[in-house]
Length: 346
Image 1: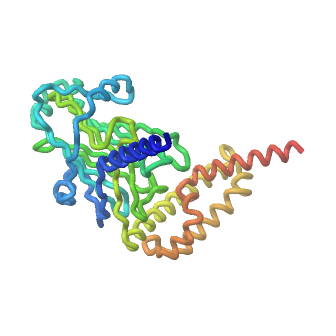
Image 2: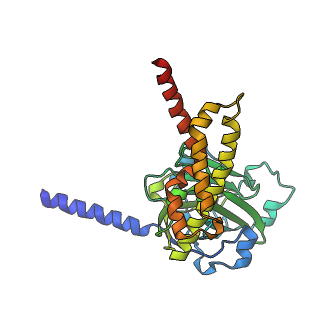
Image 3: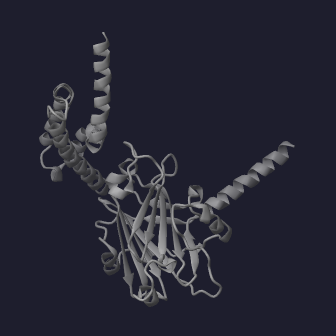
């Protein structure tokens, strides 16, 4: 009996390992500067030797269930004899964030762009669905639904906004353009949107792209599993940055945090010190010294462009507060009101 259990366990482990090895993996390199937009990616020729084309047909049975998913309108049926369409992407990161460039071959591109075709018809909904989790576990995932013809991008947040989760709607830049042979899509996600998961030591993310091709009845293809099935997504493997590259990432984020703090502190000062709409006592007893102390620290470090590793060490204890100053103020406001209530109850 024990031997049977052991053999079964070994067998299941082997299947799990084989499944893990079967997952698509893409190595994401650090580059000095990411191209900005579709045309810039095309003209740069960046990473042409890392062009990823391992897309497979979307599972038919899984596709049938998507009719129950109200988040997006997908064309999942593939017609017999429909021409094959290559789908590919390239990806890299720099000190500002991570960039994705998708190339979608479309042999019927002229017909699709023909002005005589009803722009509201389902046939125009050539689209991409992009999922990623900026870690392997413990993080809510992000979903983007990009209509390549209209250029519209819908963002679906699978976590409630809080100090450690921000909607990409406020941060991501997405561009779609028609090309001679199909469509190009450029996606840029700045580090300030996901700064808890910077690849300062390399690291893996879960990632998936699904292309839907209702025009021409080509169905769907996927790189990394099915819709919403994060455990089946492919893997992004970020190359470990050099010390200089890591410093560039950290310096830029610290600089963003500093200027964000200055703007939010100014707004908080204006609001809370106002006798009619604010609360001068809260401002004078709580916020004023906090803002002054942080301002003095930032100014003492000189020009943010010249911040060194030692400068960043001094910033690190307060950087989260700088990045999330609105949440910091809300937290202090709550504690202030609780304290006032206790004082009034005495």
